[in-house]
Image (cartoon, rainbow, N blue to C red; front, side):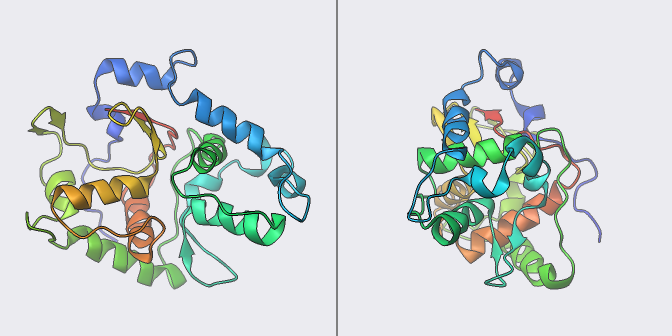
Length: 238
């Protein structure tokens, strides 16, 4: 399968030295409080089943290693493509008998960051063949479709013009290997689907719900597009 990019670069390459340094400094790391929330919730018993994440998965350092590299994945029960956030809520509802978390809540961001942190440095490696192929094609079609009043596709910024400056921002390749990402603009971490919504709104286009089939398929295409890039979650971006 031919790749649209000659060279694949993480968004970290396009950031200022200060934010790049912040990402790797344990003392200056701004997403630390959310990571600690994930650590705390991992062993916290919730729901009617009287279970915690650790009840089934034991030590996250071992059981979660490499998990982030392969999402989105097809859920065996529903036969549908789901993001990691949806997997976490499936576990909460079906196994713990607990309430699901809102996609952008502190608890969900914290748990997603904690799970993905155990794959930091490992290369992205998602499936796009077999049962995954239709979702891959859907995500690819979304990526190249012009939309909104500005009549722009994702590719116009992140493929045709990456490295160029738009206002005060340098356009990156739009890689997904650092999400959830702490954005200085947000002053908190945010999910990849939040970023999708923001991009859609910037081109004056219809946005979709977090966790929607449209955004999940797009997430799969982006993960393939960044295949081989190391997981950086949570990255620090402008």
